[in-house]
Amino acid sequence: MAAAPLTSPRAATAPILETRGLDIVRGGRLIVHVDRLTIESGEIRVVLGPNGCGKTTMMRALNTLTPSTGEILFKGAPVLTRSDKLALRRQTAAVFQQAYLLATTVRANVETGLRIRGVDAEERHRRAGDALEMLGVAHLADRPRDGLSGGEAQRVSIARALAVDPAIIFLDEPTAALDPPTRRELLADLERIFRELKTSVMWVTHDIGEALAVADRIAFITEGRVRQDGTPDEILTRPASKEVADFLGVDTWIEGEVRDGGDGRLTFVARGGGCLTVEDPRPGPALVCIRPDDVVLFREPPQAVGPERPNSFPATVSGLRPVGRHWRVSLDWEGETVDAVLDRTAQAQLAVKQGDEVWALIDAPLQALPRESPAAL
Figure (cartoon, rainbow, N blue to C red):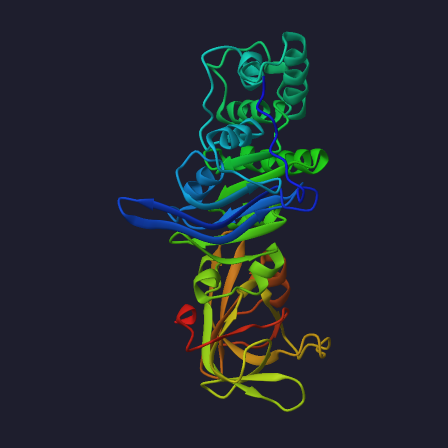
């Protein structure tokens, strides 16, 4: 018989999973600390960060597979006792980077969790078939484990997790071992399935594109600490620190000073004298980060500049190189280097070359980070 679900008077409004003051210690050293992290019902919650930063360790602690201190609440109720932890595990499922399948048929693998939970044979057969159908591998039901491709094996592993109808599914780098075409197909299918089922998901990844493609919210973690927590748009367009922005590929950093323009706007004055309109920070020394894919190039001054897109300026092309299917264009602006990215169509139209005079438009709000902040150094 399955363990009784954890319940709480506040469960109707509480996150499905929450942790507060989570600490994980190994060898006397604190390796992960999380002030607070939540997963809402039906949410795809991505934990993003570089390899070795503590993402998987944190996920395992939230599933009570790794010892930790602090609070874990499931559906609003504290997870304290051994029985509480068992109840949490019985209502969750996990999928890892490598598909761990038993040496039996595909169907038998998918039925494993159901069998452990005491589900009768007829119901096991039905739910396993539904899960395999969702993942597009129902035709493999009677095949043995051996001989499955990497993508097929991972789909079977995910079907096994979904068959138990988990309250939360934990995914640890589920596409990292797959080739690009297989990975793209699986990503698209997983997002569709999770949206249709309204499944609550904690998805661990180091891949920025993967995180942005599937996440409702992203927690960015390095060195065992959550550095920023927000929507994909907030993380991408408003990184909280240079550390976050560097990981996201923002490699244009300009030093200067934020000044109050007196008209409700803040002006960033670069060392070379160039000015940009920025958001948020108080006046003082600052860094501005500019994403290359936010920079649009024109041969003539752009006509669409207005209060919502105030940052445009003339610049000189100082470098040009192909990067895959795009061109990376380096611009000299008032002694500062600003990079832009052109796709092949844009480069064919503009035909820019080194030494050309162009106009650059930054087609996104600009954020400055206070220079004295340790995170900005």
